[in-house]
Image 1 (cartoon, rainbow, N blue to C red):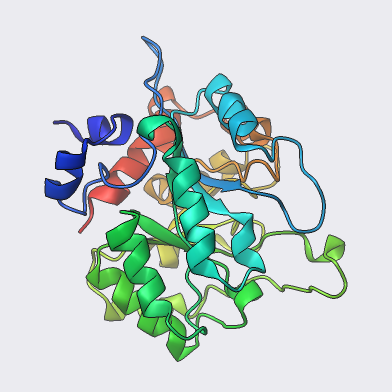
Image 2: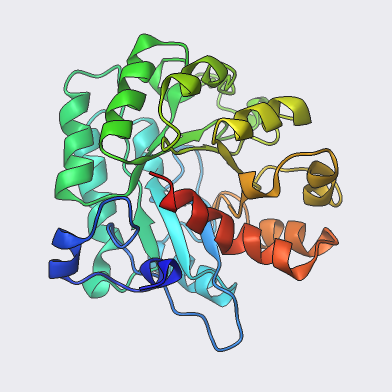
Length: 299
């Protein structure tokens, strides 16, 4: 089966038990098949449940799924806003998996669980994400969970995720620091410790930095992280023709992935980023899906 078929088709119970975990047939939602002539779009940055500080449009999973499908998204990698402040992450992950498996696995959502390496029992939480919920990866929120990427706890988590061949997503920013609730200040995550950490791990370790291109603006730093295998979504990339400018400044196209950060941001924001950059059609398709497909095949 071609690798895109793994992205777009649901696994049966037997297939889930026999397919190598490096392949993306594992996990929750199967996504939607694109219409004839349309390219699939994989959104690597979506959230379910409610943002803790205010209501958002489309913070209902059914409404969000409908909007994503309407916008051409065939698969959405989803974490839970509950992971930011809830202490019981096992319960958060249970609810996330249940939502993503609704309607017999036909959901557009693919669950990415939450793990906090500063909590006791985090290894069991990681095990449950992998073995119980069959998640293909986890999404971390270091700035809300009280650690940095230089913390030995993060290094230990990175090693455990690598052993399980799980994708590791790191949310660098959730909200502009100027609009944060004054009692819940969460500075942007410093990604630079990854320059020392990633070389210690084999080439198959998969790290995505979400909401990072508002914080990481130096193309040299982005390129150095990309050379170590990191990938970046475009949700917080700012400026006209932002994708085109990054590529012109020698950021590898393969390091970019489509991410909307819906429902916090309207999905049209990221779609517009693709349209306003005068990229050849093949490069646009790469950002929509091919780059993520190739990223997932690394092991």
